[in-house]
Length: 425
Ligand code: DSN
Image (cartoon, rainbow, N blue to C red; front, side, top):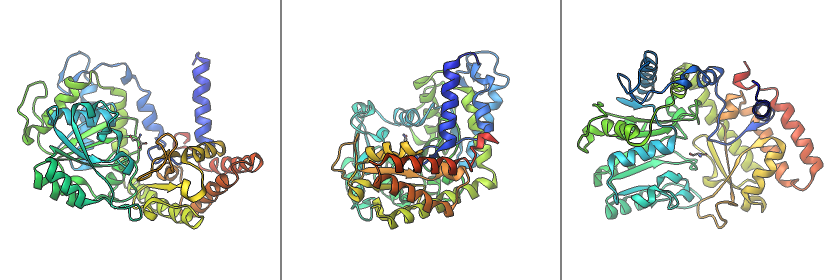
């Protein structure tokens, strides 16, 4: 490449990833095959429309490619229809809102500060200006369990058109049967945003919301699923012609959603991304992927235990999934943002996060969010978790001692280089 500046930045990022450990629970390292599909000539092609119904010529290979991605996604998640075109998770969620709601309609989703996601109706989002978002949260900080009684009370009072199950900061399993019971009682569409746990569902380590009667699932493809940055929407039921207006009812849901993704909300799909998604779904269907996701869970439990034994107070005192939320302010008197910065210095990447009822503001919250999907991809197992917890503790306790931080940084680097990136092989 002639562009020396970009070449240098890519090389530097590669070194950063290789010489450190990724503990952000929503990040992962993709395979060489996913990377090469992303960098393929499919990036040159416009393909507005859907297979067999495109607006441009030259679709001989894009049509079978998108069909392959769709069929693989359907099989992996036991769906009847998949739309693989959303550019990411936010557009996927927005497409479902547009498909099902009228302006002013009500959606019941999880509070952001209790583990929900921005696109589940936080007041700063554009969607919150269009729709009426009401919220459920957790019962208490100790157990961290979702308050299903409160959810039911709010649902009965507000009569939401959608009940949304999903999170980006909740370390426990969701009771999909309870969601379904409440949703059916008030006649709401059952929507699951499984962005964080899609890989865990694909690898059969966690239950699939469709098995509990959910109508629609949205997801990103780049977290535990370990694919390219992108989104997807899965539905039950058959899709019709998305280029024709249809009535808003459950039978038409797949068609309504396809219609919102294109032509409603997006233009041309990114076909290089579709190629990488197809590769991802292939990889996630292999038996090794089930072993991988089981290891994510084992590593998360072990890391949580090792952290708690070193004085870290964890929200819900542990984890059932891939993520851990530590209240570092209460544990060590230092906020999550400061800890994030200290960890960056020694090559450990994590992110600060609000904890339930956080007394501190979102930009400088009490929490630190960690996860094990990426380090498990690197090949780390339970035996390595004590070392990571030890580095976390030592870095926080010695945050003003550059000599010790330097020593920890060298240790992290030496350790990380023993575990190549999947794209190195
Ligand atoms: N930004 C993602 C996360 O880190 O959880 C959610 O979209």
